Length: 345
Image (cartoon, rainbow, N blue to C red; front, side):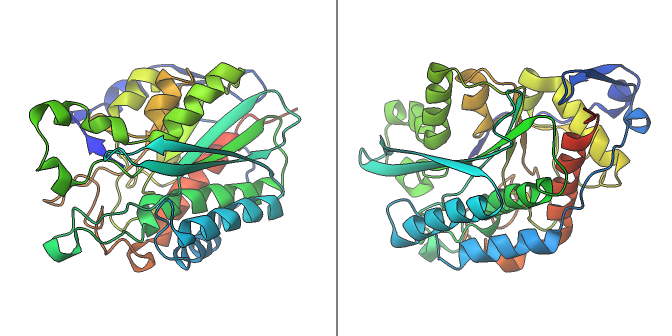
């Protein structure tokens, strides 16, 4: 990611807790809640932050996964093989898409499906590519170096893998599709923006989230649907706080409310404050707008002076050393609990 548009900070906790929220569950029934203390907690597997951390380190061991590089090819092979090892049915979508400079970039979206026999599907997504330029690094000498992307890429994939591993211990009555999007983070670099005309800058946003846009267009054309989607982006950084992103609130308010209140009830409220943040251009946007699947974004909002996504965003310091296993645990356990709540056959 990405771009953070208008900032809207709104305390929504009191209003949500006092109202009724409806969210369809895996078996088609509707779960009714009147605040975080009333959410039914079903038995769910344990999310291992250590396991997720190992998946981050494995991805980073290939080096920056910049599209078109040997590291990108090798890591894509590893991701597909690992999901197969975890029991998923894997499909790949390959194409070429045009980047900000007019050059064609190889795109490889990887889908891993658990319980493919179930027609009722839940969609969980994250991007796996590394940004080619550390253009937000405080040292200008690093601006054309690639990003290792331990948090901004590998963390979301790692959480999906650990959820997939946990699903093998207790079957769901719905299916889960994990999609690893490519070409999310190849948007126009800041140093190139400085050289563009005003007319060119109008179209600058068109080069983010290329892989998810292509996937969403294809999904809609082929009739794929899911009850809801959750996108994971930068879900392991130290100090992360995941506020309620505004596109998520616009398209899927009940799901946002459920996830944030569930996290609070599980003891992860410090990571999921009940505040609304700005609009973020991220992979959930084409899922909503093109695939017409209500989807939310779990993405940090933490202003550090250089960005709203934390101190390592688009810098050479986005390495495994900057990952906090406690953050991975908060996100992963909350999503596992969401999947297993009201999961009675």
